[in-house]
Amino acid sequence: MSNQPTAAVIGLGSMGWGAAVSLLRAGIQTYGVDIRSDVTAAFASEGGTGCATPSEASANADVVFVFVVNGQQAEDVLFGAHGAVATAKQGTVFVTCVTMEPSRATDLAARTTDAGMLAIDAPVSGGSAKALTGEMTIMASGPAAGFDKAAPCLDAVATKVYRLGDAAGKGSQVKMINQLLAGVHIAAAAEALTLGAKIGLDLEMLHEVIQECAGNSWMFGNRGAHIVQGDYTPHSAVDIFVKDLGIVTGEADTHPVPLSHTALALFKEASAAGMGREDDAAVAKLLARKGDIKLPGMS
Image (cartoon, rainbow, N blue to C red; front, side, top):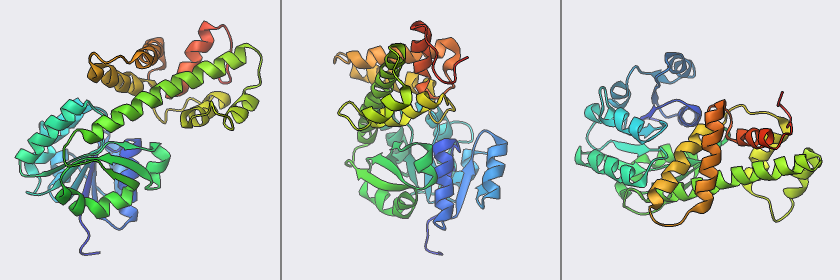
């Protein structure tokens, strides 16, 4: 394993944790850092090296993955106090797996490149379950040299790595479109199942049948199960889609995105009602309250 690159993961949330564990499983020495010291300690107990700051984590890494919540956090961990770029070796590959505005992704990649690094704009999809098994999908753009150097690490965390060109921002543009569809599909699933409940249909039956019909979507199957089971444990949160659909509507500028605006309003309302940190399927509870019905898991 001596010719293996070393890796760092900044942000050990649900996706970052899965990526870090997958890197360890592939035999790659991995440094991890998170704002929660207990999570960093747990990572050390898995065989990784826990670090106190992004700068410490990146100092000895060949490939640095960034798994924070938004573009501002990405900027902070890269260039802020104790930022990773300042201590990284020249030629380190920074793989930024953050859903953010494509315009911001382009700017951060340019600043990283100007500092002598290789920058890959690489948002991910697949959820926490696929992150844990190293089966994420990565939508990536950046220089070929960066992909080549990071290849063993990318192979450890993902089954599909789409190389979308040399220009940073393309990965974030594709992820933005994915989040448009995901957010609209969650809202549609919530609307469909709450209407089904209102008219007296058995939700388990309805969920099963629709999955075999043309109206199905991946989100209906996955998030619909959360609604049917009344389980709103946050695998992804309402507030994530407040952010992501906000990116869609902001970056769309004058292009009409009416479904995105409608879904965003629903997620915003659910967040304001105290559901922001619940699973994103909790928008169904908001619609149920408005429709004067009770779904499983509602008191």
